[in-house]
Length: 348
View 1 (spheres, rainbow, N blue to C red):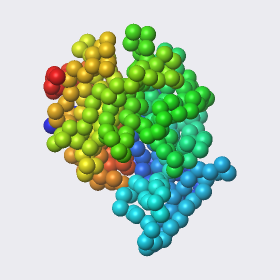
View 2 (tube, helix red, strand yellow):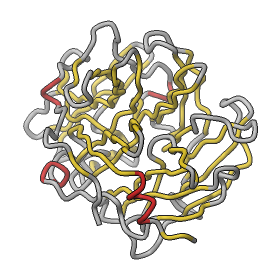
View 3 (cartoon, helix red, strand yellow):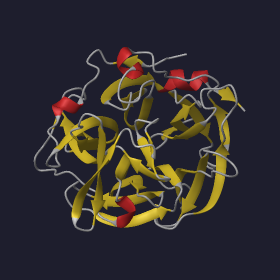
View 4 (cartoon, rainbow, N blue to C red):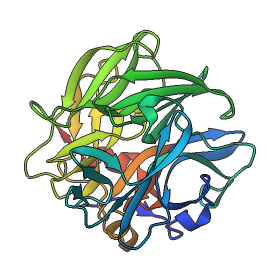
């Protein structure tokens, strides 16, 4: 089942629409952006992944160091090198990302045609926990500012960082708010019974799996009372892993969350779940079938094919305008009807 209405302008942004920000690099892909509104414009916080221009027979990629960017290069014929995944390589037991990600900003007056504004410079990783880059920003728009949660990646682990801003020019970096291994953090955009809530996705290689959890906080910095609200389901579109998309949407029937799910074959789809308004740890309903699947050509073929992945949206009445990454390479947009999503959900 696929109930979204894709824009006829898709893809709306491609790697060639941007100039590399790191000297000597090329842009390999644009990935799922965080979304916000400011000064009557729609803004995207785009994850841009760059790498050195590749040489025949070589694989090379950048990392952050205390002295700046450093490029590592290996022979593809090296028996110690595992190149089976285009996103991550393994060399002598150590994992490296094939690209380095940071954030770029694009703005639009109509939600379709986006442009860079030089007044908003890129944001790069700035600490050892971000040595392999920063990824997958989600923006919670609140009365006191914009709160950006994102994935911090390094050789040590993957965790959730947070920054806050009022203008996307000056930031307060709060460091890692969910420790490794964790990602897919989306903060609710209003308090519930005087508490902040956030989705997150811890994972374990030994016990458990890649499930969706929820936590509460008095201040958005210190999180506790962690509860798993959704696990993987054998035979479903979310059989291998699942995680939150953007901040949930408040409806009269509950908090509506559009989330991503993947199979062991790494086919990424979108689903939805409904949470109780007063107790968001209680799941009222959940998709049996995906509400969006990678069926368009630009969603099936790219840097890493068969992927639709969204962590940013704008809500206008019954319409949810999502902005999503397709095939880990291009940015697209599509619309959902909130009523139509709710009508597809299976009440628990």
